[in-house]
Image (cartoon, rainbow, N blue to C red):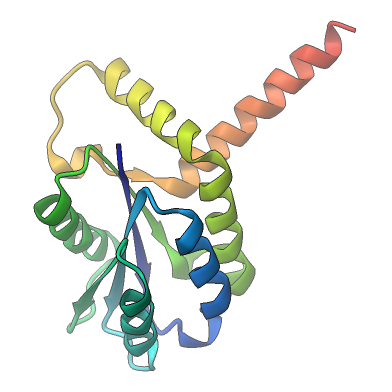
Length: 164
């Protein structure tokens, strides 16, 4: 089962580590990426198009007039749902990450490390809500999920350590 990840960029050209991104796209073959360019005035769109040329699991959506982060994510979600009919669809706003350059790289590493846990966590959330959701209600923040998964792992480790 594929998972979709939408990553929104705005004037991010200098922070995109192209070689790093390419290496992780190779490793994350069962994740479908949608890179959304939110009206960047620099060469962000050209870099995203170049990434798309190298990988089958990368799509690019170009927004020509700046939109809010939520609207940009929704544009990516509409594209992903229409193109791939994915059940699990997360998003990352690259510009909101704490340390821009290392922030996106760290998120990519964690997506690779926790991809199965992300899907399990999303299934649990959807099951617990116990109601049919619209496309936009199904969207989840990848960063929020990763934080929760990390916290749960830390708590589990504390419980394990306290037994000894």
